[in-house]
Length: 566
Image (tube, rainbow, N blue to C red):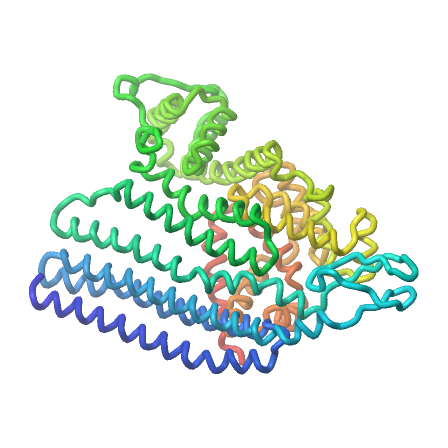
């Protein structure tokens, strides 16, 4: 790298330093505002959350400038000579800036929410010490867990009392454990980011020297596995300490997060696969040389009018599942394939016979249709697998459908009316909260999306809110396996209006405004209304992929309009 190119790299580093200074200045200024909001609203962090959301948008904009600017600097490097090693140095600078910016922002966010919960604690203590009287005879009740809902039988008249925690207590315990655990584990989280960046530095240096980028050795992958497990164990144990979790809760959370953050990636890593007796990714989908001209149709009838579409759907289902070997093998069997080699031969056969067609307008349309169908098939396979594995089994006798239905009705019901609804399903408030926690926990750890899919259908099927009919129709269509939404006569609002609502919400989020209040003021809508409309149009857009581009354009236009409003 010549002196002129080095000067350009130095200029990019100076640019990153300027962005870093702007980010630090932004957070320094924001700290005072956040502390003021905490002092003004010590029992409710909603205003703080809105402000942090607005600050986050500004931070992301600064970070985006770093990545958007690397290309012009690289162009200037290339004008002065060979692109390497200048490009590697530019990438390294951006890589560490991203890590630093993410860590700086996350530490700020954790600090603000931790301080908010500390400020809330005296009020929580007062709330938990308040005496509670029997609703029937007025005799004092003895609470065992004042931070949770309880059913307490009165010692005087023996009547059952539903006793719920005060609002400030509920808010405190809903978020405190996560933020305290995040603060405890953050050093380990970013140690992993830096460990991975070190290997990327080495690979870039090899490329700059004209060598092939080497694969990360198994020893480093195992070291990263241990670092990831140590991080998630620290997080889960701290969280369990503060929210009353059990060792089983810790174990299940760690395993779920390890799958998402590490093992899914490793199952696509050939070094890791070889060490665990698996074929490489390429070998998994390749046809041996002596069989490359052999037609193999497998479970697909080549005379069927949907044969090519079936192959495309199978391809997408299996490619998506490759990160999970056991699920991949299960889908192979479900679709009727003998093994991965037969599937590879079938796909190669279709590509050989229909490759030219797939490049045509009709072929592209068919691929779009197959993508929509694959999404639907993937959801059905996930639900079926979830049902057989027990993932969708009732919690304390309460099915996912009943839970989702009650969740939908809770928003519009008065407390007394909701208690009556619970009673109809043999639940009191304490049991409801255990069931609620159980389903939320399953949903958060379910990497297949089965729980979320069934929950969404049941929630929308409850038909609550002013757009409940559209939500019900969409849920029915999804339940029937229809690709896309029902007919246009179920349209809850125009597509343009939907984009306006989306653009307005994006603008309010950037401005740190209370989105629920603004929705009511401008559109007379609730969050549930937005969810119903969004589900409908999301499904409709799956029938016409061009609508996604139109949505992006309209939403952006409306966002700018609402940003310009006072």
